[in-house]
Structure formats: structure tokens, C-alpha cells
Length: 213
Ligand code: SF4
Image 1 (cartoon, rainbow, N blue to C red):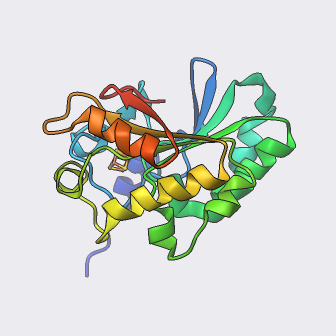
Image 2: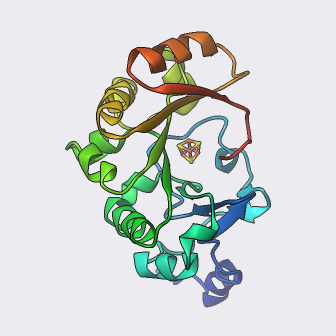
């Protein structure tokens, strides 16, 4: 077997990873670039690796302490948002560590999530999130399973009902829960998505494609 040339590896590591990035007065944390969905509208599945000119691909998964050190004083930001080019709850322990540090230093936390954490981890992680997450934004993205599969291409079966169950559970434990869907996607009924959000105890926000936050 022929080993990959070292030069290829050096090129990949040529730029430092973007572990945190600021948009307006919010600080975003890029814990992972992996997720279990392959959303057709996602920039990373459309030949782009950038959000707001930040390249969010990671050469390695960052240690929580490294992120904590980079954040510094979280009170200088309106909120610290766990977002990025992947699903933060895939790295649940790292997420909890960093969020706890932000809270301990007086900051506010928000989690942008696909709502699949309970399905992925095969347990109810919402009470744990509730100890250190002030607000949560859950991507529903569709008014039914058919449209969800069309647009989000989940790799884990039963993802759509799992998102709805996660919304319900989050609304029981976390004071600020917002469900989102992207306005303008083919076949997506924003009004129906809003009804699902409100019925399950959450607020609703229609997002614009490519508008992070
Ligand atoms: S969950 Fe987010 S990062 Fe993953 S494919 Fe969908 S839009 Fe992209």
C-alpha cells in the first residue's frame, strides 16, 4: 500500500482551523464539522466551506479547554452560540464543558441544533443541556417526514419524529426554545411548521437561506 504523501497533509493543515468566529455581537463556537444529516441546502454540500467568509472545515476536533481559552471573557458578547458546520450535540461532552465554562464566567449560551441528540445518543440529554444552555434553536425544516427526508436526507431512521419529540422535551426543560424552518424551500409550508412549533410549546422563526444565526 502506498502512503499518502506528507505534502498533501501539510496543505490541508496550512490554515488554522476556525474554532470561534464572531458575527455582529455574537460569538460562534465551531465544535465539529460533522452531522448526521446531508441537507440539500447546506453550503457544505454545495461546494462551499464558508459561512460569512469563515472556512469552518476542521482538521481535527478541538479540545474543550482550547475553545474555553479562545472565548476568554464571554460577557463581551451578547451570547455564545454553538453552531458551525456540523451538529454540536455530536460532541456532547465537549459542548457541556464549554457551555458550563461560559455560564460560570457570566456569559449566555445558545445551542443551534438539528434536534437529533436524543436519537443519536439513545437517551434523553435535554436535562443535561438545560443545566448550561439558556436558549436553543431547533431546525425542524419541514412540516412532514416526506419533506424532511427530501431536504435534510437523514442518515438515521425516524429522524423526523425524533426532532418533534426533542422540541417537546426541550420546551419542558429550557426556557427559550425556538423552532426554525427555511422560507422558500420547495414544498415547505412555513405556516404548517409554525403550527408544529407552537403546538409543541416552542416559538417559531422562519429563516432565510444562508443566513447563519
Ligand atoms: S445539519 Fe446543518 S451542517 Fe448538517 S447538513 Fe444540515 S445544514 Fe449542514
